Amino acid sequence: MSTSVYLLTICLPLATVLLVFGMKYFAAVQQARSRLAQDEAYRQLAAQAAQSQAETAAQLASMSVTLARLESRTASVEQILKQVE
Image (cartoon, rainbow, N blue to C red; front, side):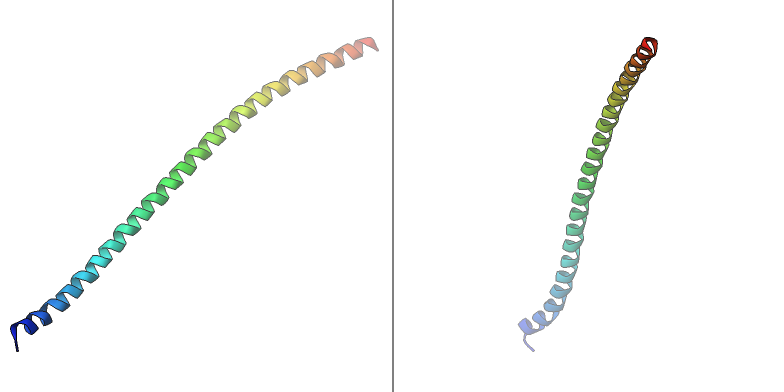
């Protein structure tokens, strides 16, 4: 058996094992990157939802104040109408 054939029969299985582990490592890295990107997207979505909720709460408070003013005006108009009767 020649030396080159002997080295080839030893190196090919070793190269195959290294290639398989390299592909496994590469797949794990890609999964981690995609998971990180997905987590970042969820964080941005949560931040937008929190901001929208705060804006909605502020608008609701403003509408509540406006409604209270309208109720007081309506009450004063009713009182005036009762006095006219």
